[in-house]
Image (tube, rainbow, N blue to C red; front, side):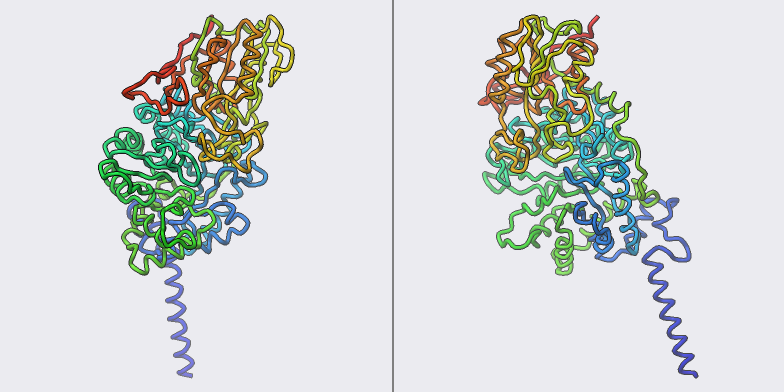
Length: 636
């Protein structure tokens, strides 16, 4: 009997100890855990949570998987203790509605809260010109068009509206804005930049404020020098994207890092994404380029040290897989993980290889090649942002409205202010009562005028999301319009010609001039990328301008298109950039309802051989200089 009583006593002690351990790990102790108490100071909550975490908990927070890896089995979020999940370009729930997005995020959040410490995950997405992944969202002009407005407050409002629509789908983290300084128009991400001048890009860092006002964590990218790589040095088979920035440390600071300094010191950005590209310091002699994701000097030294960044660093999509490892092997390799973590990256975007990353990092820590101090620094940075964002108190999402009238009106205003009038021989503003002949493949194509990062990563031509095409905008003003995309219909003798031509959608890599074409994209997007118009576009311009007494040409593109030889036959030329879903904003300036106020954020070259050309070059003779734009007041 005594032995039985003793057994019961021992069992009670063991059970009590186990319960105490569970309560301590979960925060369910007699007194509510400090980290779950919103009334406690943030740093105290953070220290309390850190003290409860195992190495597996911490490495889980440093890991981000893609939606496709976990959506069908949310239990993987629990198993891997993921700190974050993302949707890449075109990675969407079905149906693609705000409610389905919110349901997706909430299902993954429930799995995250099923972990012992109930740490919420943060969901991230690329909403670079509106919430482009979401069908029916307001699609704003790409950054290059916003740069043409020269209006930091308008940019703030655009990004606030973007943030509001991102939040309406349950997402609290945006991999935007891109504050790259685009120095070579052949780069396929030129349109993601606000322009070639670091001073202009710095002013537009108000985009960070807009996202923060909407309750969304902003990310400035791609740190640093991604827009300044040399042509021909590209990685992954591309011509310039992910290439090598050959520069001095002083020039990198002056040109490429200036917008980051402002985003950190003035706008308190909480997330930074390094670039795929590499840095080759001129003062260190030729060669020796180092991937930004492996550069401790760049991330820990410059970003976290000199610039004083206290948020967290998120890698780009599988970016550490590009870090050279002569030994090779399954990726990410131990060398790639070790170099990335020790360089100062805090969270790793491992879309399909999260378990592999976690296993390798665990081994690196246990072997002493990655210190616990580095792990703790990374996790504290991540958790601090989660606490600041209020995720611990409000982890679940509620679906809301996207693409509402107020946001579309704002987008229409942004479109009008982004239009740059390059030439006007007394043709503009147009008169609504005239007869119009509209031609060109970009006149009535929402996908083409929206560009990349819309519904799909590389974008998609056609009727891909609700909105108003440029043709639709013209028809809303002028009743007598003939439309013929290829100018095959007869052209009335008294018609005013309006030709809308330019590029078809593309994104990073495949958008480079000289890169391979996108292998899975539709035929219209497989044309070789160029700084000149296609033969078909040139033919339409020639045909319409020859048959009409007044000919207006609109260039819908993410970068300048060399059109020097056709200028004499064109009466009015407009750089329309990639206006997004609200093409009526283009019609607003054409008919004088709104003034032309846009100015070039990029130098417009005379010829393709003049590229790269940037304001401040020793020899600087562009067709149209940086900052150029004819100003035309509102009509009568």
